[in-house]
Length: 467
Image (cartoon, rainbow, N blue to C red):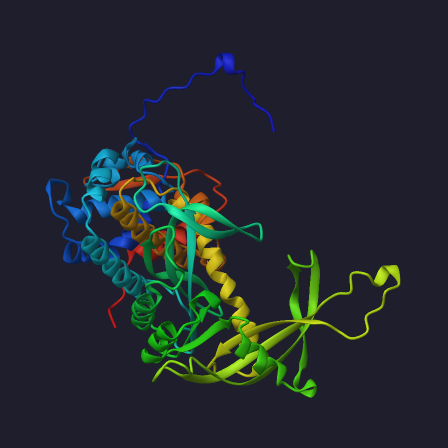
């Protein structure tokens, strides 16, 4: 690829008032309008002070900017170029949006989170976000330590995170999230909560689980809901909250003495050999592994807590420890195994239930998606402003995901960066046609033309009727 014209004979001029660089925001924000974003924010969110007015317009601007790829307050200026004023009204300056976020109290953040949950439920009615949710849905809860810089970040503390398989202490803020998915649908964010960087993983997880399960029901998850968690959430309060909402749980069990005793009681003839669909890299052995065995037994957890004991299945996967000295002629006398236990009341058979629990890793894909987009930074020094930013980022993620499902099946599972690149960041020129009619002229031969038109047509029709 090469230039056909000499730069010495080429001029550049920023003088066309009819051009926009993110024409895909038109159908995307039309979808947000159909789902009632501004109405929900106006109904629930009431910040105080001079900068708290018109929250429905300012939150809408923040959602639009994040959908277009903004990851800081200054980036919101991308909403104010060219013909954006012709296409959208109520656009606010970045400084105004930043001042608005800083006026939030923790109560306002919880109001915003409620609006976000109802917004997701309405998006699920406007777009096929969660196909198959009437039969089976998964709710994955996990936390992410988001690194921040600067000594004036409120709430920033050192907390544990994993980088390239190694546990490290990182100074940052801790984001707790619950995501909903089905076996055939990409995950959406049901609930979020920002915590101090040194927060224990399970802090607030029980109440978040209650909120997320309620949101899942509103989104059409009328069948079985399985809440998947890692060992940090293995406690009576979290599991009790899940069961109290009529959902099932699947949580990684820690290797304590009672768990080890239950595993040791499993007979040698109870193990069933399985093969992983794909080989998995083992950081401890520094090699690929592909075979394992599974078995199950009954187990009662939290027996020492009065009235909180839970009896369910203990599913155990064991992976054979490789003999690293076999090449030197040192054969093993007996096989050694490493054990991974899952405590669950899943109604599925052994191998299926164990495989479903390993799919809990889907929540890491959501974290990767938002950190490559709106959560690339925690932009404010004020803790509640960052908490509001997290909640709005969840709204933007769900909106972009809904837009992808309306565009085409491949985009329904595409990364947010892919949807932004192919459907939102499309240049266009506005032109008037007759009285009150506007035409968007987009690039000829755009490689995602049909998908863009699918989204356009889907958002132009009448809104879907509420259930």
